[in-house]
Image (cartoon, rainbow, N blue to C red; front, side):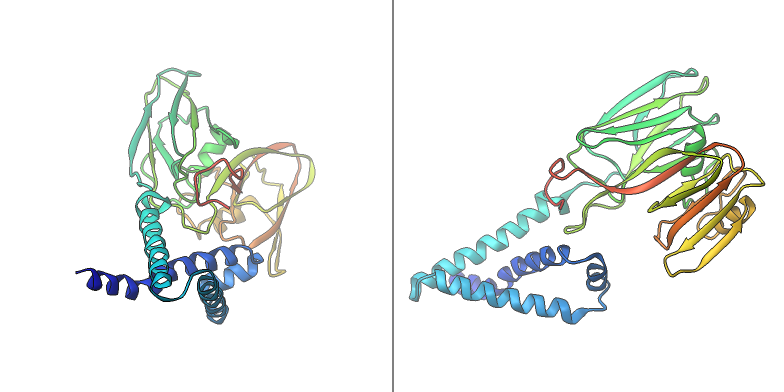
Length: 325
C-alpha cells in the first residue's frame, strides 16, 4: 500500500511544484511595466511567459536539489514539499480569494421615508454594485470604507448620471451604481443614503465578479469636481458627467492615439454615449472612458458648474485581505 501511495505522490510532484512556479511567474508579471503586463495577459507575448516559466522551474529545481539530501531521504523531502505546494493551492481555492462567495440581488436596506432622512447600513465587504428604484431621485449616496476613506459621494445629479452607466435596459426609475471592478472582501463599509421624498425604496447589492489573483481590486471612486469659467482639463477618468453643461459650452477630446475631436457640444456627447448605453435621456451629458481610450478632455464653460468624476483607484496597501499588491 505504502509504495503505491509513494508512486502517486512522486508522479504528482512536478505538477504540484508547477502550481508554485505559476504563482511565481504571476508575481514576476505584476512587477513588469503596464504595457508588458497587458501583452502577457492578452497572449500576444506567449514566448515571454514560456521563458519565465522555464527559468523559474530550473531555478526552483536546482535550489531544491541543492538543499535536499541525496537518496531516499531526499526523495521523501521532495515529496513533502510537493504535497505541501498542492495543499496550499487547494486551500487557496477553497479559503482564499477564489473562494469568495458572490452575491446576486440581495437586499441591503429599506430606506426610511421622508425628505432629508438618512438611512445607514454596514457590510463586511464592498459589493461590485448597488441598485435601487426611486420615483424621486435620492438626495445623496455616500459610501465610506475603513482604511480607504470615502469612495463614493454624490448628490442627485451625479446619481442620475452614473446610475445608468452602460445600462442597456433600464427598469423604470432604477439606478445601478458600480462601486468596484469585483467584490472586495474584508472591508468594513458604511453606506449612507439620504431620501428625498415620502418613499421607501429598497437598496440591493450584487457582485458577479470576484478578485482575480495577481490583479489588484479597484474602487470606482466617485467625487465632485468644480468647473470654472474657461478651459478645464480632465485626465485619467472612467466617466466624466456634466449635468449642467450649457448649449454654448464646448468639449475637446484628445485620444490616446493622438486623434482629437474638437468643439463638441452636449448633443454630440449624447450621440456618442449611445454607443455604450441606451439611456441618454436629457440631461445625460457624460463621457465614457471605461476602455481608457481617452487621454484628456477639455471642457470650456461659459458659467461655473459641477462635474462628477469617476476614477479606478486601488485600495490602500495592507488594508485588504490577501491577494492585493
